[in-house]
Image (tube, rainbow, N blue to C red):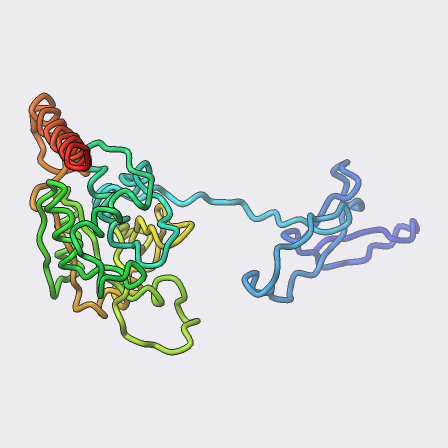
Length: 289
């Protein structure tokens, strides 16, 4: 309770003042320069509105201090969220998620720089791996496995996986491609009808338990580099394939796997895949002459 002489007659008027909602409008620190404000109405849910216009000089600013969230602890992040950023590209064409996801794994494991959606799609055509012979129908999971084996990145299919299985693979540095229901990844809650159909593959790069998200490298989304979705949302989409995934047979050191590997030996192994790829190109060229 504070007292103020409001009529210059020496009489005190007692006015309750809540200093948590006062602004010094004349910047001189005097009590009479303060005005009381009413903040009793709840603030609207900002998600229901478009971004507001800049605050004018006559509007009351939000003086709440901004607290930056603490970075997640290393134990809360499984995998390497940005590992595939240099390898990600937008697939551009329907049905190209198989060769595009395989290209990201291939780039990571060999050091190749693949940004052309047709790079492996042409090889899929040569191998006859398109579903029904139509690129627009995409590939089967077995076809993607065959394609990676053809490119000297041995891998295998695992089904009925769990979140723990996935985190273990990511912690160990294995490349992982998951088969999911694209509608539940891209249009959560907006699907015209739940079809429970696994129709898309993408690279899983990390699971961030601190934020509660799975980090994806999704060639089917123009914003798919380090795309994040809530863990439960990902699990729902993954469940439509019986939790199927393609896992590389060997871990990749750059993904955090195989601690203690001699860098010189690793470089030789990586170059060996590049050499094999170049040999394939030479043979294909000679065969065409």
